[in-house]
Amino acid sequence: MTDPYENELRARFGSDVELGVESGGEVPDDPGLRRMLTRRTQRRYLDRAVPDSLVRLLLAAALSASSKSDFQQASVIWLKDRARRDRLAALFPDMPWIGNAPVFLVFLGDARRLERLGTLRGHAQDNGALEGFFNAAIDGALALQSCILAAEILGLGTCPISVLRNRIDEVAEILELPDKVFPVAGLCLGYPAQPGFISMRLPFEASVHIDRYDDSGLAEAVDAYDRRRDARHSIADRQRAPERFGTAQFYGWSEDKARHAMALEGAGFATWLKAHGFTFDEPR
Ligand SMILES: Cc1cc2nc3c(=O)[nH]c(=O)nc-3n(C[C@H](O)[C@H](O)[C@H](O)COP(=O)(O)O)c2cc1C
Image (cartoon, rainbow, N blue to C red):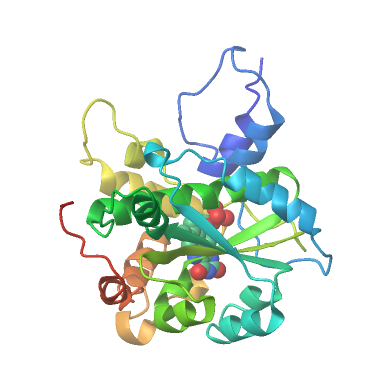
């Protein structure tokens, strides 16, 4: 018997990767899981409106995500006003999908609401410690991913947008964010204009540990992954900043990401957060 998810797992991890997930016929064949395993980011959308009622349904799915302590520290801004959207999109000309997608949402970590509840109930408490930031960021991220999966299940495409944090002062002004409310990521949403492609993931050797953390095999696992990924979709002709790093003979994912990480994205975000209510201290 063939495994129900064999094709999806091969598409995600590569055909020669051993994941040890052969079900022996015990795992139900589920179309939702099939979609999840083959999910992909989409940056081009059809010129087809997404009905408001559908967006509301996706927001309901997003806000059904689990939430630390049931504090419910995720909020969403649905950016409907064209002028405001255009001002935001103009900050990121390299990513035209921010302005072009039929729908644009911004998922927020909202550490403010819990503070307001405390004040309303007469138990005022500062929520600007690292714990407040961390919990709100996680709630925002879980809501974001829940929205992504719900959208993809219904045949829509999405693209999260964390680049918002690179221009945080302007973004916060456009979205009128109060203190202790911060963007986790935007989310472009629409019907995909093309099939897109499945982005291969690292093998379990690099990302799953049994009983204790052990990354002694990382270099080998990543090297094999780089070559698998290159065989599927080479990025050799898109080397990042060759004037700074030179031209690599073999240019794989790990070289690309190591260069990418040197770009210091998000510089200024910590300063902004500290100026807007977060201390990152221990709770007091
Ligand atoms: C938190 C987060 C922020 C992201 N920010 C951006 C972004 O600003 N612009 C963009 O084009 N893609 C963005 N992406 C999409 C990633 O580039 C994409 O998820 C990654 O390349 C893996 O591809 P896949 O989602 O198709 O598997 C973001 C993804 C996540 C999860």
